[in-house]
Structures are given as structure tokens and as C-alpha cells.
Length: 175
Image 1: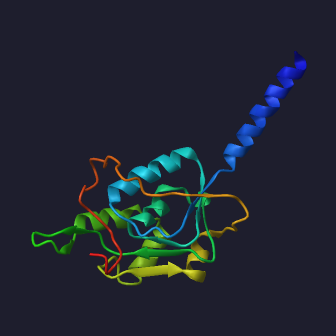
Image 2 (image 1 turned 90 degrees about the vertical axis):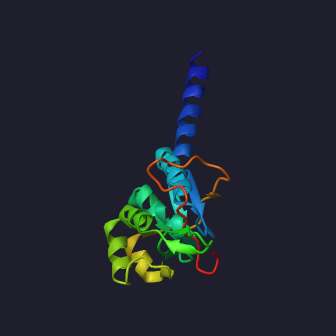
Image 3 (image 1 turned 45 degrees about the vertical axis):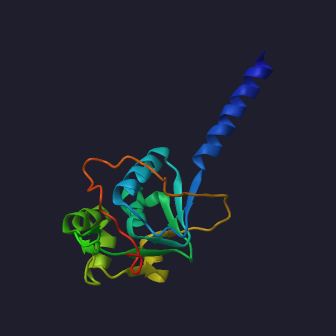
């Protein structure tokens, strides 16, 4: 009986160790609706997983910086963050900047990221990129020696009531 109890305790201990080392890899994420990303990252924050940024994380994807604790984010040498203003479709079907959603997006970022954005003219319709040494000065480096799953945007996720449902943040040239 002691052997079975000891074995069960060892299995539970090892299961807990595996869960604490879980990681999520973000790469080639061009963004989308703000509400979708807010919901996705709230769930990710609750999981306690570490986030590896290993490629493009643009537009609404960058909400990860405000949603996940800084000590749970690391960046590889391939990491690149793209920022620009949020927008909605206007009456004629063209993209128009949404100042309220843009301010909300900007306010989600940590202070060092907001300072970096402000020093480049703020969030405008034109994409600005944070990468390389500037990005690695803000976030710890990580190495892809651990297995990681790539997160994908769900097709249909309920949008939080506090987020403009139509606010989008696509890459330039996609609207």
C-alpha cells in the first residue's frame, strides 16, 4: 500500500512539474479584432503559461504585452512587434481610425512600450516595428529549447462588452 501511495505521489508531483513549464509560442500573428485578443489573453494569463514571442506579433496580437506579466514573456532574436492605430469600417467601407479603441489599446501596454511608441509619433495608421536590441532591452531573451505550442486566433469568441466589437487592428495594406 505504501508503494502505491508513494507512486501516486510521485506521478502527481511530476504532473505538476510538467504543467509549470508549459509555454505558448507566438509567431506570424498579424492581429485582428481587439476583443478576440483580450479574451484569448485573459485565458492565457489565467493559465500561468510562459509566452515566447518568436516572430511577428502585430496589431491586436501586441495586447499580449499588457495582458501577460512581463516575467512570463520572453523574446527570441526573430521576435518583431508591430503597432498601429485601431480602426473601424466607415460608411463607404473604408478603414477609419477609431480614437477610443486606439486609446484603449495604447493604455493596455506597459509603460516602457508606451514610451517607445510615443517616441515614434504614437499609434497612427502606419505600422511601426519594435524588434532587435530595442525589444530585447525591454523583454528577457528566450531560446527555443523547449517544446511550445503556437496559439491561434479562435474563429468565434464572444467579445467583451467593454471593447468596441468592430474595432480591428490589421496590418497596413490589408484593408
